[in-house]
Every structure is written in structure tokens, then in C-alpha cells.
Length: 291
Image 1 (cartoon, rainbow, N blue to C red):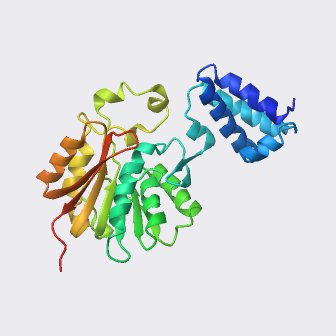
Image 2 (image 1 turned 60 degrees about the vertical axis):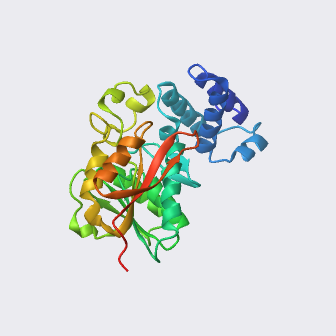
Image 3 (image 1 turned 135 degrees about the vertical axis):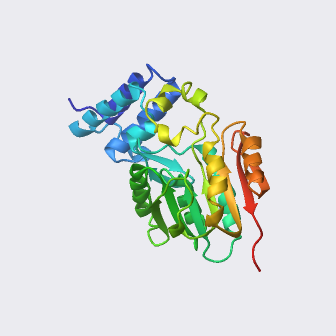
């Protein structure tokens, strides 16, 4: 049975409120109805007494059931906003989070002061969110998005196309735990948000993360530092003299990550916090730039 948009919204919000607080339920219902109807929220308000099609009603029923089962809103929507971009996401990639804006900002601020047309590598790219944020703001940068998951790279390619960055951004399949392949060449800056959840923490993740987000993109080994050790050592050859390495890390991992960098002859330049005041990212320099 078809219903008015206002009725569809109220029913969805009430159903979601069985597992979420009222404010979150309203937000989810609004986002879902905008997505399934193709209307902006302002247009929905203006047309709240208009009847939604049967297709929209059925799609909302399916979407609400997915939310009730615990699936994250981003995967139900098939997209998520990050750093001013709306990115395609699915269960092959992590959902971009506000925490990651810290490392994206650190990389962007450094890239703006690099030589013309800098080469930048986003390693363990997932959806491509960090590298695409850099490419959007550093308009002469040449950015490579790299990941071991071919399914993640397919998502990243979609986002490159949707952001209209195909002329300056490309994808490549690499294993961050292995030596940097020679075909990559060298980069002015490497940025990475690698897997950093410890084995113990993996068992304690919220169900919405543990049951839906890709474990390959989460698990960083027993101590969560496996990828930092590998990248700091193996990707020196992929950096130009005086090049920069920028990492996101988990809560409380900053000292350990910096120790790994210093052991591999990097000089720590800056450590920064996310929006919640949690230390989240570091940038370091390897060697000195040739003159």
C-alpha cells in the first residue's frame, strides 16, 4: 500500500527506534528516505503530504530491515561523506570516519608545500578516501591509490570516476607487507591508514564493525603494529630523498609508531589529534632532499 512521505518517514523512524535512540532513528529515517526517493530533505518536507511510490515504500522496508539487523547506515545507503566528498562504500571497504580527517589534513598540509606536480601514494587505500581528499585539494598532485584487496580497488576506481579525478589519480594492486615493487617508482609523500586493531581488540569490536566491515582492513597483527613495521622498512625505496611518510594510528599507539619510524631512520615532524582530541596521526621525513 502506498503511503504519504510523512507516513513513510514516521514508520521508518519508529521501527529503527527499537534499536537506536530517537534522535539517531530520525536521522537514519531521513537519510534513507532521501536516498530511496531521490529527493533532498527540503523537497521531502515540501512534499510530505504527497504519496510515495510503491517502489519507494518497498525499498524503505528493505532498508529499515537491514538497519534493524545491525548493518551500518553507510552500507545501506551505499555512500558516505568524507572531507567534503560523497564516496561510494560497500562491505569491501571500511566506512570513512571523522578520525581519518586528521591524517588527511596532515598529508594535505604537507603536500601543498611540495614541488610542482608531486607524486603521492595512498597505501592501504580502501575506498580511496585519503588519497582523493589530497587530490581534490592539491590540484597538481598525481595520486596513486594502492591496496591488496582487488574488491576495495574496484570501489576506489568508482570513487575516482565519481570525483572526476581520472586524469590525476590511478589504482594499483600491491601488498603493503611486502617490499615496495619497483614499478611504483618513487613518491614525494606516502600516506597510509593501515590495519591497526590488535588480535585481542578484534574480538571486542562492536557487532556493527565485526560483522560487516572487512577484517582484512582492520586486523594489524597481534600487537596492531605489523603494517607500520613493514611499511616503514619496505617503502623507503618508494620515497624520494627527503620524502615524507604519514600514518594514521589507533588510540594509544602513537609512541610505538613513532619508535618504529625512528628505528627506520625517519625524523618525526608532527603528531596530531582528531576532532575528539585523541592523538591519531604522525608525519615523518626520511633522509634529506637532494639539492
